[in-house]
Length: 320
Image (cartoon, rainbow, N blue to C red; front, side, top):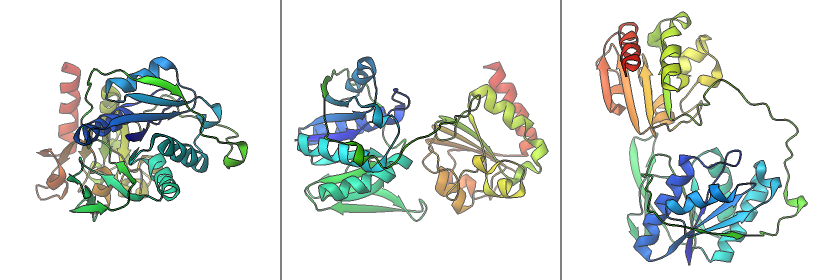
């Protein structure tokens, strides 16, 4: 009986998100004396697949099928549930990103499994199986018990350290028995943004709020983001005012992000904003109001005028 992890790839490459899932699964496997099987869909080289072994996967099921190079929720859920049944997996783990949140419920139905999304730590107990998650826009914690034989969970990003355990994995070709009728989505054309770090992929995000006073004052943030190789974001009032594009709006009603480092310049910290960035590993806030709610969520806070602080940040980064 193994733990199954869906390791999503991006253009044939794995990101830290997938390695985090495998590390998390490996920690659970040690507790229950089990093993970790990763399932990969689409064209991925053996060298890339073997990387999953470093973080605790003992086996990688490789579905080498170009039809999976584009995500189709129905076909993907069917393939993963087929792998789970083949491996007799009692726990199936997904990332709590857009793909995971779409596929995990479908997979749970196929496996007659209980589902908990947005898990933030290792299980509190294995029998009964209890996991922890944030609720009420991260204002509270819920401990949720899954009573079904098979459990499906999605792991919130940055909830577990990526740990190189020095292990190796075997690669097995797997046929999930998917035919063309299972694919309900066809990709006609793909247009990718170039020269810009996507917020969903960014490990560092630099964000500005209404405290920036005007869209004309974004030059400093753009320079800082460029120096850090960071994604550039904003709060909802900024996009509503037309200072920045709505595609840069992060928060509960915008793009949900979980970078390693999040800079909030001139953002007060409304609950809707914090709901979309609370999974960030480290939050640095700059605001002239010492009572701003953002400081309650921040790991580091600077009380000051953003137009004074930002140039100093730029100087410091350049010095490094």
